[in-house]
Length: 508
Image (cartoon, rainbow, N blue to C red; front, side):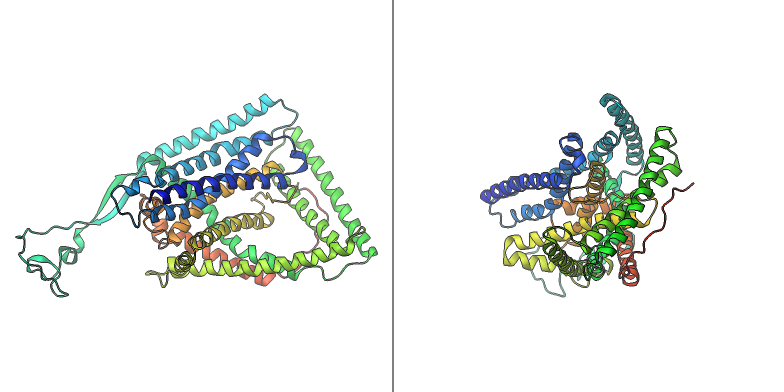
């Protein structure tokens, strides 16, 4: 048993190192050329945040493996040699909350500060915002924990009389208890014996619970939209693909129109910069900034599409062949993603929303895969959890393009600024808490008797004032409803090509 635990610790250490290396690779390849050899602190925060979010996802399979270390224990105290998963969960999620509430906002305020200011002034300005945020969060957490930081467990009070120890045991279906009773006290108890047992939750558990609720709201909105738009976006991208190379005259015409649009956006950006220097950063200014950002993203997409339809250079034919293969790849990934999305929706309905569950479904699949090979079920479980995180980012991008009040921060290979990196890392960190809670609930049969089930299954769902959100499946119903609406939207409008916008003007 000790050898198994040692192997688990070694695997966990190796995975942490590989996760760190992978995140550094992502940062190096996604970063914007303007951020090369600078903005080191935001980069450190990005790598740390991504590592914490990925490790937190992988901790649930590790929790299951940790539980299995005790399943065949042959001596007392064997389980004391396993990983302290409950303490590790608390550490990871406290670090997650600190990163989301304090470190990432500080890094964003510092990065987006006026470049004309000195480093000391930018740090001072960012600290002011973070200190105010810390005071507000501390007051809110303290007040909520003082008034509502308790868990209410529904229990049944049972009592029975004593009887002499029998000389022989004679149990049957009609005689289940000693002393001649036909049924035990648990079966004979009336409804009035049911009562509520209250106890105060620990402060770390309460912080994790509130962070989970906040993350659940974002996860429900962005994840519900993203789980549908992620695969359908890829499929309809293939449907709207360029069918053939355009002529040179068509290319010149389209390029001229895009050039005009670029000059309009540059003029609008210059006007907004002048307003910023004049101190006119009101609601109208912020609305215009978001409008320019979205128009700029659409312009970049049009430029990429035009380059695909008219490849140039000595390897134009090769470029067109790669474009065709790229769209075929999107179709294949879209179909696979659609299967995963439908499996997720079906699992939520038949296992979480219907009481009692119709079938364990994906729980049963993971267990069968574990029986085939120990890591297959773990890998499949991790894949389904990571898919939800990717769906959250896809949903945030999709809504950001269509809703004015949501700021868009797209991730682009070789062209992602640090503020977009930090925003998405914060969104992933906040959503990862909810994804773990969601997965721990959705795969409770697979992850039973784990530390995660104790935290997210018992404590969280019994917290005073919060438990009703889980009792009535509010988040699951909203998730499925948003996914259904997004499916309908894409079925009705996803196949259409976006219409070119007219002349861009700032709102007055």
